[in-house]
Amino acid sequence: MGYRVEVFDRAKKRVGEIDTWISLDFTVRWCAEGIWQLLIKDGTPQADLIEKGGGVAIWQEGVSEPLLSGQVDQYQKYWTKVQHTGPGSLYISGKCHNRLAYSRLAFPEPASPIPRQYAGRSTRAVASGAGSAIWSELSSALGPSALPDRRILGLNVGTDPQSGGKVTDSLRYDVIGTKLEEWCKARDLGYRFIYNADSQEVDLKVYAPRDLSREIRFSPELGNLREYIYTLTGPRITRVVVACQGEGSARYIWQLIDSASESEWGTSYEQFVDRRDVPLKTSPTGAPELVTTTGSDGFEDIGQNPSGADWTPLVIAARKTLTGAETAAQKADETHDKAKGPYNQAVNALEDAQGAVTRAKKRLADADTAAEKAAAQKALDEAETDLGKATTAHTKAKGDFDTSKAALTEATSNLTAAKNALKAALTAAKPVAVEHYLSVIREAAEAALKEGEKSGNFQVYPIDTDYCQFGRDYFVGDKVTVAVDGTEYVDIVREVSINVDEAGKTNEVSPKIGQQGSGEPLNLYKTVSELQKKLRRLEARM
Image (cartoon, rainbow, N blue to C red; front, side):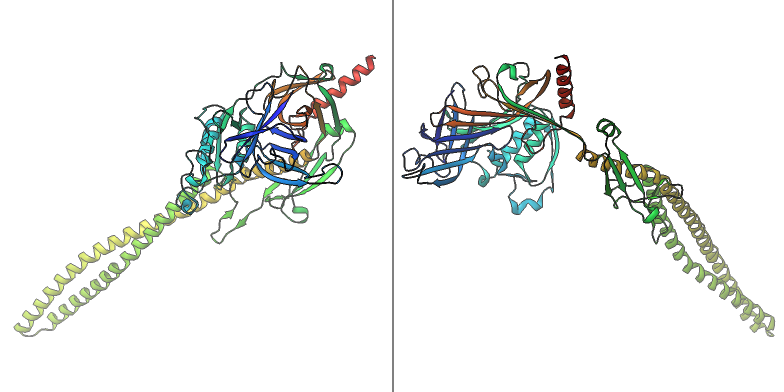
C-alpha cells in the first residue's frame, strides 16, 4: 500500500508532488484536528515546494480522495554530523484542515463585527438537525455567509446537508471546533475538511459514519490485531461521607456506600466531601432540615430553586397575591389620607356653623327693639342656612372618610392574610427544597464514587493486512468490532496514526478504537470482567 504527497500553495493551487522523503507521519482524527509531519532533505527542489500558507494532501493508493490535507504551520531545520549531514533535513508539519473549525469563535451575532456585538443578542440559540447546525455555523463563521474579513479563501462549504439528530445548544464566543465535537459525538454524525484536487479548493464534508461492525473485525485469529491488553482495577473509594452546613452536631452528614464493589473486592475505602454550600442541617430528630434566615420583613429566606425561581407554584402565587395586597393597602392608605383633610375641614366648618347659630339665637333672644329683632332674625336665618350647607358637606365628607376607612381596614386585613399565606407557603415549600438538596449531595457522593470506582481498561492495537486496510476498507467514525477471548466489543474508530517510510511503504498503521488514547478512557469494567471470566472458564476446561 503506497502513499503520495501533493503540495498546494496558499491559493490552494497544486504546485507539485513530493515523492521522496525520509519519513512521513500523520494522524487522522474523527471530528477533530489531525496532524501531519514530513521529514525531507533540505536544499532540494521538493523542499522548496511547500511555502508559508501552503500545505499538503496525503493520498493513499486505491482511495479516491486524500486521507488528510492541511496547511503547514511549522518548519524545523535538523542537522547532525552523523545522519542528517550536508544541507541537513527539514521537518515540515501542520494540522489537518479540520483546524479551520478551531480557528473561529461562534459570535452571538455572526453578521455583526465585534464592535457591534453589543447591539445584538448576548447568546445565540441553536435548535436544528446536527448536519444543518454544523453547516450553518461554519458557513457563517468562515464560509460565504461570513463577514468578509473572516472568510477563508478557497473554501467550499456546499449546501445544507439537513441530516443528523437535533441539536439544542446556546453559543457565546465558543470555539466552533470544540462545539462540533460535542454535537457529532452524541448524534452519529461526522464532518471533515478535505482538499479537492479537481476544484483545487477545500471542501466541507458532513457525513454519517458507517456501521461496519459486521464487516470490519479485529482479532488475533484474523491476524489483524498486533496486541491487546486488558486490566481490572479495584475501587479506590467505596464510601463517601458528605457534610453540609451547620456546626458541630447540627451539621448534616450523609453517607453513600458502593456495597457491590465492597462485596466483590472485599475491601472498603472512605472519603469525605465538604459541601458547606448545601443549606441543610440536622434537626433535633436527626432528619435533614433546611437552613433559613428571617428577614426584616418577617419572612423566612428559604432560597430559590436552580432556575432562580421559588420552590413551588404555591409560593409564587402567594408572593403575587402579597404584592397585589401591598399595592392595594398602599392605595387605600393614600385614599384614606386624602379623605382625612376634607373630613376634618367639614367637622370644623360644622362646629363653626353650629356656634354661629347658637350665637344668633342668643342675639335674637336679647333683642329689645323691633329693629334689633329683625336684624337678629336675619342673622339667625343666614346662620341656619350656613349650618344646613355645613351639615350637608359634613355628611358627604364623613361618608367619604368612613368609606376610605373601611377600605383601608379591609386592605389591611387582606395584607395580613396575604402575609400569613406566604409564610404558610414558605413553610410548605421547605420539604421540596430539602429533597432538592438531598439530590445534590447524592450527586456529589456519586461523583466521588465514580472518580474512585473500579475500572476496566481495554487497549487494542490493530494492524493493516491485505484484507483489512484503513482508508480503503474503513475510516475514522466507522463502527468496527474487536473480538478477544470470546467477547466482542463494538465502538467507533476515533483516530488512526500512520508512519510511512522513505520508499512510500507503510511501517505502521495504528487505529484507536473507542476512548482509547483520548484522555477520557471509557470504563469498560463490565466488558473486561466478562473477558476475565471467560478466560478462567477456558483455562478450567483445559
